[in-house]
Amino acid sequence: MDNEVKRIPCKNENCDKTILEATAKKTGGYCYPCYNAIQAKEQEEYIRKNIRNVNLYDGISDPVEIIKIMHMDKKYDPLIKYINYPRTKEEMYKILSKDDMDRLKNYAMELYKNDNDKWEQILLHLVCFNGADIDDCLKVLIDDCKIYEPSLFKNACDDIAELLIEKLKCKDYRVRINHILISLAMIGNERVVEVFNEWKKNEPEFSKNLYVKPHEYSFEGGWKLDSQGKRKNLYYKKSYGITQGIAPKDNPVKFFEKQNEKCEWCGRKLTSLVIIDLHNENMHFLGLTGDKINISTCDNCTCYGYVYTDIDTNGNTSWSKYNLEPEYLDVHDEDEFEESDYDKKIYLDSNVKSENYAANQFLDVTFTKIGGMPTWIQDAEYPRCPKCGEEMMFVGQVSREDLEEYGEGTYYGFICHECKIAATGYQQT
Image (tube, rainbow, N blue to C red; front, side, top):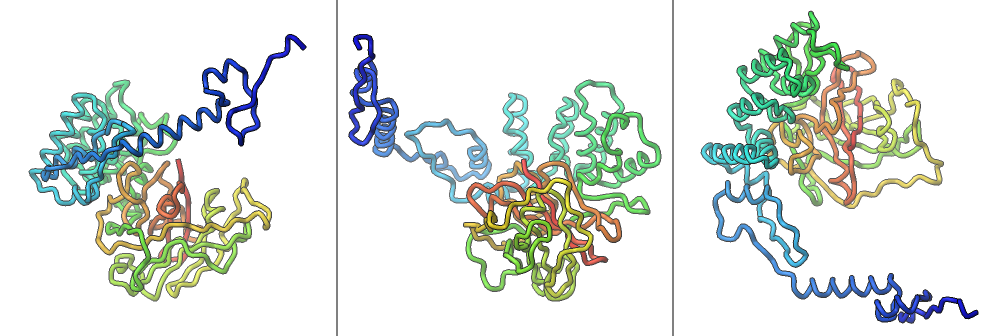
């Protein structure tokens, strides 16, 4: 037929596509998929031959200047490979002197004045890694109603707490009551405990649009008001992080090991979130005596609700009669089960960390740990013991990204000392 459009085969012998003559003129006879693949390969080869290493830290020994570079956004260039500093961000913060911390605070506030959001990251690391006093910075943030990151208020002074309480009384549209209450919970000092008790007895006017009562925001700070109106922590102040690699024989914690017992909801084998050697001196802060504890879970079903197990201090664990199957549960057929096989090995680092270590998801650290405050990705969720009704104590957490390359989400482990019941939960973005 005279009107039939003429098509010619792609120049690639291994390709069965045909193309228009006009396309062939543009691509040298190749179809566009083959043409793009050739271009990409040429680009890749060009980069391989011309890429260069750039060391932004060359000749710099001042830890403050090194940290500034660590937080700096690097301009992307396919022909540049930036050399990482040989020490981690956490290690650099840990060696800062008092004067260094003051310099870094001043630098952060300069960034703040210039609308560079890196200021928040710097202050956050100073608070969580160094326990730095940033009250002078917080006063500026409160004046400007920039109360967005409650973790910055950890361990702030009474004056800061009073300023936040006063903000709750003003009618400024910029004031976010939720953020202020979480920030007060993070401070958690005697003044905050006092005012939370007042709000428990007499609910303030500002609470009418809240989803929870004002005094219950204490959970966001890792504590609650006990029956006497005193602060009761729901976490241990001491904590330990992890290191990548094969665990030494005397390491006190084993993470994510398969158990023989099966989940009564889905049939998968249970997994020990953590097995903790109670004989090890580093684990004595847990206040448990015996051989070991095993906090087990179903790594599938705990994503839909709490999984409870009965435990003892001899390492025994069993499915608890208190488990209530969630209304919605994604349960596969038995032949569809794919037991998780994690490609990364981790073990407990013996260096003691602060309670705030890895307590915020935006810190530059690994998040698997024993002790300290949980890294809540969503709201704080301390499960109640199904037997006695009291909130359970946070023991530790395991981050999926520490176990596998593309893992996400965090598993949390809790225990009730009195009832010898463990619980696990899960959160992700």
